[in-house]
Length: 68
Length: 361
Image (cartoon, rainbow over all chains, first blue to last red; front, side, top):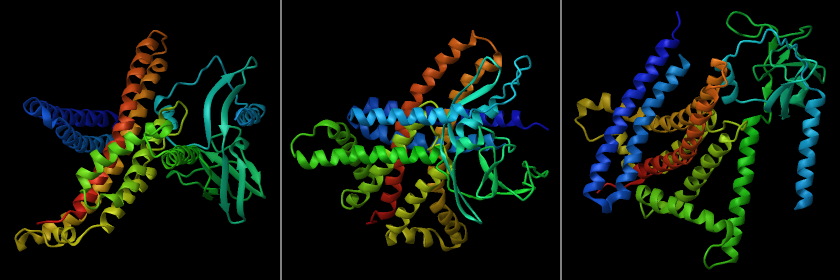
């Protein structure tokens, strides 16, 4: 049985999850910056940390899909 | 300086001629071209190798030649140390070309060196892919990755050495290479280290965090050079980097940190669940650092190579402009990722160290 297709579906699902997560962070960060432009740099740093943490989880899925 | 440059160019030419003179003489049939295997090509490009392979060409006689830069192979066998250049294998990677040195026979199979047993003429495997008639010697060769790492070390030392000398000589406004590096170092200190580690104890951690930032950044950029080594996309390298962070975090941790792990502020009944989770938590943070850097850089390389492969999969020149356009886009994105991943690694390392040394009130 060929698991290559399942690996591709898994990688796609991981991309959807990470996309939704990072999209939410981006939206909230934009709203926060619009409300408080003076806190831009602090919000950006925290946004990148949160995005990196989500991306890390998505990349776990990619690595597992690669190893299939 | 000019003389040095001429000598460098001369030695490169000599190295190339060594390869071309002994170029691989593979049977090449033009009528029946071998099927293009994109997965094999991509895996070959992102993994380590014993030479810098640039391109292949076929001459009028139909003989395939490979142009590459050989690197030294250093092996530790029962008879002691054995050294030779990787061009001795004549670009054979199937375990069929035997190199005899010091009375021992070596073959190369998928960029791994095997030592053949007495009387064996080529490598054979059993069904579990264990070699039947060969053993793996201890291999401490200067491979592509090792060479790239040494190159980045030389680059870092010369750049920062020059910057340091310039800072000592000229106490006024920074000049030359220092004017380029100082804003980056100040950015790392002011925006990454101080907010996360804390004003009071940050000085001790500046050397490690600045070094790790520039090491990752330089190697990410060196990895983007075509035919360069994929060093930060090698899990062993990222493992060592994250182990450094693990050790620094745990050795500088104060008693609040350990108390939080072994006596967390929860009801006693939850201890059997909470304590193991907290102990695993010590390891998962650096583990995530390792996977993040490895997967980001490797994924970037795979995407670029897959887009290039599309041309050969469709066997059409009209795909090429689309493919090259996308590759250019991905390449510029990868330049951003190279900086971003170095930033993230440094930021999260600083964050973990900060969590371990902060004092509770």
